[in-house]
Image 1: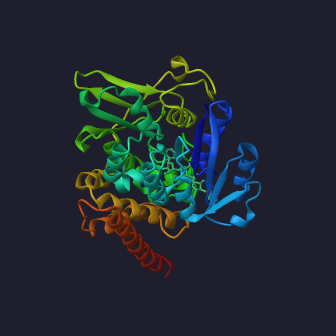
Image 2: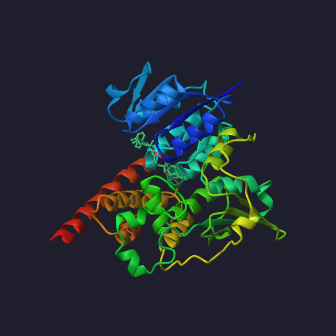
Image 3: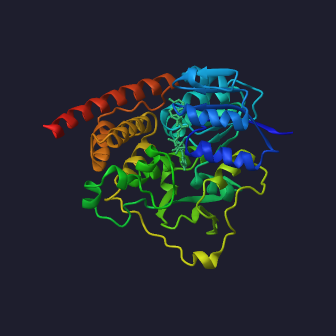
Length: 383
Ligand SMILES: NC(=O)c1ccc[n+]([C@@H]2O[C@H](COP(=O)([O-])OP(=O)(O)OC[C@H]3O[C@@H](n4cnc5c(N)ncnc54)[C@H](OP(=O)(O)O)[C@@H]3O)[C@@H](O)[C@H]2O)c1
């Protein structure tokens, strides 16, 4: 029997790579639903190739062709996630949009392949509790968490999680270089080709901060037992250290096809898209460096927010996301992303056990405050 799968964010970096995996494993999967933001042209091509039963868009539904059922906006995503005939949903939208539909899918007992890390950063306690209550599996797509997922047999025997970070485009640059960095320089990631928001977060290492919080929720691991190490070659995707001192790492060439395939085919493994065989001698060298917390202060902020919990991580995530958008629009500089996020984050009084409504309220409020602060800083910059 084919696995019935829907993809939220099928036109993005993860979404398109997932469709490449599915095309290769076409005897194993049946596409049920696809969703896009505004890239309707690409969605139309995907409709021709994969013949989904329905699609959803957040813009221009009248331009969708070739699919009888066209859904729209957040209600569209909700409807996709309410179809109990689906076996697994890949959540590959970026940012806060992922949270609500993921909760709906979990309530409907649908397994999740989760790329959208913001879902766990905003509401990890609620999401993981709900998944447990509904017997739903959440399989991580993020390469680091996918690596840890593959290494762990019994979490109670694990002492530490060791998350690797490539270090991004500014690893060997100075703080001064970062202060004058252009959008193009921040988007020039040396290893991974990803969406714009996550690429900027990778340049500031905020992405690693979000991943620390994501790992805490996925594997129920206290923050002081989650370590980050910089590994520029991106071959070791992460590791775990067992209580007896054994360290198990997962290795592979840097390709998102592998973790995406793992997440959607779990617990099975198939021959999929493999560019070439892994060769230790070709790789020859693996470096590991302690992260520079001074140059990448988001790491400290993420540990801080994670340890406080509740809406502290909502504030961190919302302020960063808005500041990243402003950076991409050329309104602020790269380092302003941190300064603005830190200002908004430290003025927030966290609610420690928030309801989902409180999370959305705080998120909305934080984003308004951040936009307002950016507007004021931007006006100052322009004078
Ligand atoms: N890329 C990676 O290698 C990678 C690795 C690990 C984790 N992740 C995580 O995976 C998620 C997706 O990342 P990405 O790099 O694939 O991002 P991306 O390339 O920016 O793609 C985002 C997807 O979300 C869709 N979208 C945007 N706004 C939407 C809206 N309002 N309603 C519905 N759909 C909307 C986009 O549609 P349109 O393009 O049609 O507008 C696109 O399909 C992020 O949370 C990221 O942190 C990514």
